[in-house]
Image (cartoon, rainbow, N blue to C red):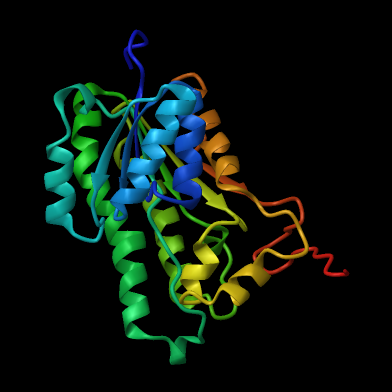
Length: 259
């Protein structure tokens, strides 16, 4: 990377949660941000906030990562001065539904597979050729503790996040010798819209997920991602698990629910 220019960071799923947290942290570190998500209004609001707070330049892309033609077109249309992407944070993802595998909805399965696996690959496919050409870059995939530990009713979601972890390792192997670093980050419980999406908008169920302990915040994962990027170029953290102090495993969380 040319140290004389600000570094460019592309973040998918940037409109909320971990993606938004990564945007805040990298903005504080002086990055130019390419913010990609489906909700353009949220992206523009975030870009305005980052400009006001950190004097950060942002380029917003309204895009659904599940559509390869759209992903390819939108990334190809990035202005010339933004095209040198130094960091790709593959964050777009979701859990949908919380049923046993035999009761799961096909529509939920397809949405998770299309977003968490295929969407990640589509963005990778559009961005990585430039990194290979420049012989530099850092790909940070946001997976989940669910990719390490299958839990009851996690089934397809756990499978998609296990796939992300496997793909991260595959990226590291196949890109070996290109100068590109690859990091897989597996967060535990992070207080975002994740639970609300999983429970199809049921706010009471979603709120209960985060009661009785201090969950991680999106900015916490952003700090981990920034640390991995800021290490010297010869140092690569390939795989990292990050949990709240109260969380020992996917299903063991110390909660104090007394009033």
